[in-house]
Image (cartoon, rainbow, N blue to C red; front, side, top):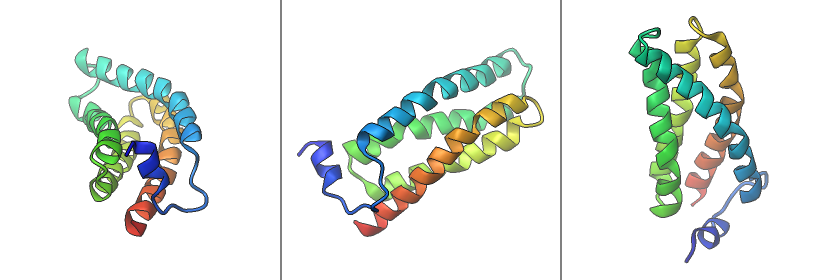
Length: 130
């Protein structure tokens, strides 16, 4: 069966956003993620930021990118739950790490943190209920 049929068949909380809403929110977040992550990486490459500041951004990007294949390709809910917890934790780490250097980068992560916080609770519910 296709991913949408599979996902629609899962037990989910009543407040679960529609796939269209989820897609729209990511379309709004990805440009901010791209710009801020790109800036941090560029500053690390220019040696204006220590690599330890860029590390949580790199881990977050990798964990974010593998979530969809884990969740919808492998359909592995427990592993997707672990992955989203890594995504959430690295956002907090990113904010704390970059705050002393570039507060505007840290502030721009708050919508991302808010969305992933909701998505983490949703994923944990879906994992527990299925």
